[in-house]
Length: 70
Image 1 (cartoon, helix red, strand yellow):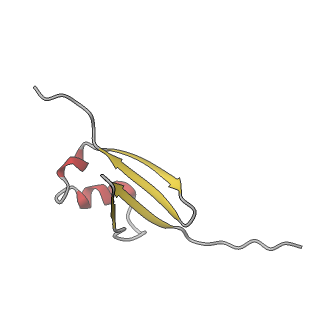
Image 2 (tube, rainbow, N blue to C red; image 1 turned 60 degrees about the vertical axis):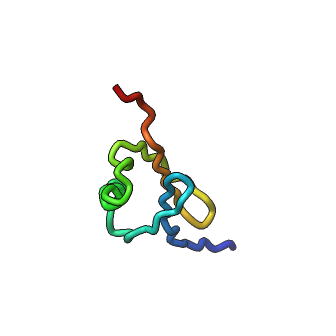
């Protein structure tokens, strides 16, 4: 017989190549965005993708919205 094991994957948030620390698993990814918006104002309009399974973590990626000024 084989046995199953479970593991809780940590969350990872990425923005412009930087990994932002997960403030806690009790808050939603959308709340994480709101938490980091004062430090990174571009996150207010950024597109969030994920989670992507990266083996030992679930990765959420914030990408700047593409648009034109004017």
